[in-house]
Amino acid sequence: MRRGKASGFTFIEIIVVTVIVMTLGAAIYATLSRGVRLWGRVAKDSGEWKADIWLEKMTGELRNVFYDPQWKFRGTKTELFFSSLDRLNTEKAQGALPVYVCYTYDSKKKNLIAQTFPFEDILMKKIKSPTRLSVLDKVRSFDLRYYAYDAKVRTHRWETQWTQDCFPEAVKITVEFEPIKHRKWIRTVSIPTESPCAA
Image 1 (cartoon, rainbow, N blue to C red):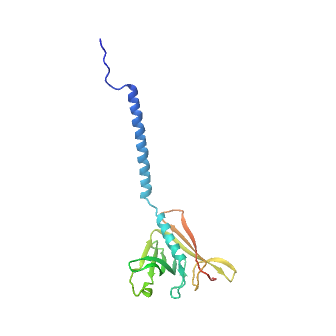
Image 2 (image 1 turned 90 degrees about the horizontal axis):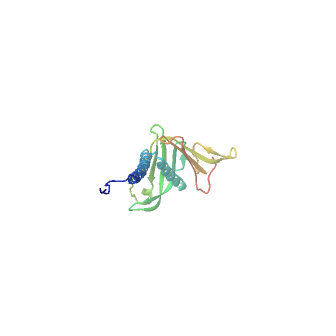
Image 3 (image 1 turned 30 degrees about the vertical axis):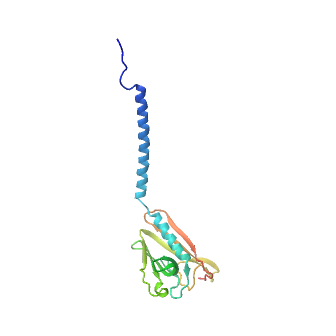
């Protein structure tokens, strides 16, 4: 009797294929699992990047502040008004142009509003450009403080409002957002002026 070669897989071949398939399956599962977790994290964006951009914009405007007797630097705990130089790139004008900036916090609507009014009408013979408006939503709290020397008590201190005809030495901005719990953005911006005044 003659025995022929058995047609089929040996036990070792089946084990090797099983191990390879299991390894590939585990690698694919791990990759997809990480991707789904990352997608879930991105999908529930907390808005931190919006806060960073907003504060960076506000900081830049405060660092470019200048004195204008018509639009003086004024501020309370939730509002700030000042004149600043703003980068402007339009078809008709390029460069830094003076603007009047208003920041106001609406505690009922929980939003922070920034308005920019260009002075182009005075400088550029009536070039009309729209007022820029930006809104930051879901703001739990917004607080402004003004740092200056108090001559009465001979020390520096933080004021809750600014009505002087000059600039404070610094402005402290505190912002807290509803989606991001237990985290506040606090930024102190030095006002680059030659002669800050006393409170």
